[in-house]
Image (cartoon, rainbow, N blue to C red; front, side, top):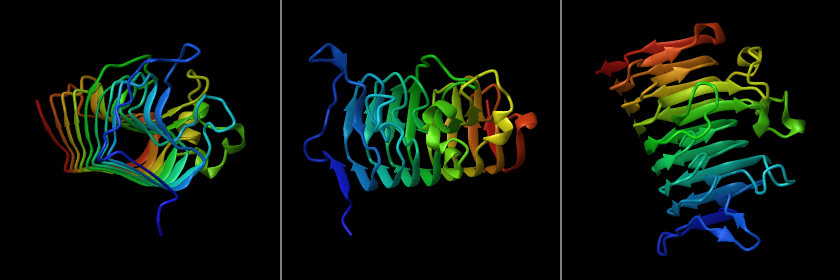
Length: 259
């Protein structure tokens, strides 16, 4: 079965340049897919949009098409750089794959699931994050997140409001404040209860190579029933940072660290 939506510029590479559009509006999202299923986004070059590179959000933020549910989405073999927020942002998406992308020079986590379910982030190269207005816990090369402001009201409190069943494996992350991050960000950043009730769960973080993470190699700020194993962390003051108060049943084994 052919995909319902196929976005590819493999022969004529797409360069999305930051500029002012008619009416003095800046380009917010370079490639945006929302309320869709069976989607392939493959082989694009995205350069210097204002907010997001490749995302399942819809512009403008807060509109009727923003933060809608999508499924069966593949984002692969793209090169994405130069934005304030996420380079690749599968939000409100299930059954997804983010693979073999090169992402760098972002302002928030370079690849961010916020929230997402039943997917894999495999074999990506992430480097060089220059943080812009970070959320609690910092910004990372790769992020699994619950963030209340990324949900439509009708989805709050439902199963698909949280991130779960996500595999993060075989990625290379360099020169980001945090290498790989799992966290909960409620609308009220001071509220701690959501870090227990809305945390990510059933995630796997394995066989990743993380270098020069200034804050932490792997940070589990909140989460349940996850695995953090067989990763290598080099050049981080804190290799693995797991917040005991807001995590439960996080299995760790065979992680290697080096100064």
